[in-house]
Length: 125
Image 1 (cartoon, rainbow, N blue to C red):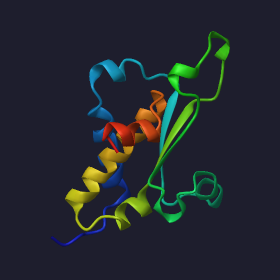
Image 2 (spheres, helix red, strand yellow):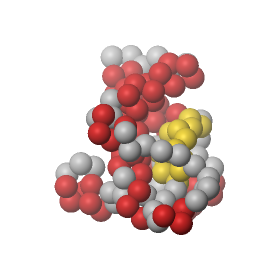
Image 3 (cartoon, helix red, strand yellow):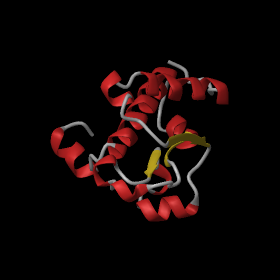
């Protein structure tokens, strides 16, 4: 299957579909979070995560289970999805769709306080 480059609009639709696929009980718990699409991760993001060129997504914020009632007015948490690395890692549009969904769900897992280690042990990741 040949891979045709996705437009920014098509990629955004995949991210939006992935967010819509979250179960209702999780969507009800979403608050003060932004989802951003960037072409590439910054040098800082690659260095801080140790993922280098393979960084597909990033959650930045305080996971729900670690928040206190003193949180007050804080900046929104942020999930960033990186279009370039995701599309380069895939051979087809079908693979891109799955990778985008997996990445978005992975970053939301971090929002809900689930670590990479837990996802690996659980077989989720």
